[in-house]
Length: 113
Length: 116
Image (cartoon, rainbow over the protein chains, first blue to last red):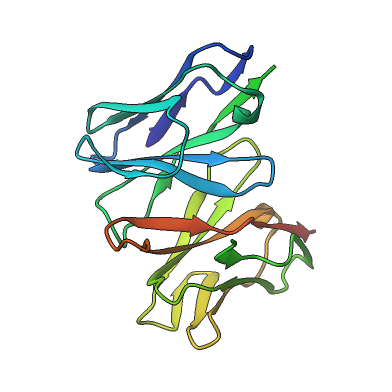
């Protein structure tokens, strides 16, 4: 059973396009996250939702818009894709907020041409 | 501004020996520390954690040591096995400067290779 799943696993697209990445967790967790791992290999938090409400919004361009239709899903929509958006995007979830272990999905490898 | 540093990008050890992965942090407000293991083309997998009120946590072959005064933690794997070959990320949890958002800050990772 996959705990945190993401689709698609790979995404190759042209600059200027709009794309979405979907994330689902079946762990019954209340909190979900989006991370970006760039070419320098740093994993950086982008957004966090707790019970469908946005609680962390790091300095991310407003071309990135997360949406949480319910506690088990957190999708990431990206408008007007740029070359610098090429990265691996990881979804994660945790039971609560604070000192809670986060469980990661397999990642979505986005390449913008 | 790297608040969590893993200064060794790679480490190679022989099967059966001890692997020691190191991590340094700068923010004294971090109160929770984790190690994640990552295989290629997969997401990070939680390995072990430690709260700042402890100095050691052990789980099977994995032990994490925390030295708060030195702002240093380490992961010991003994005995090392070829299946342990992966990238290991250190992460530290704490509230941001505003005090309202709790988040994890990750290091760049250390590639561990365990040779048979």
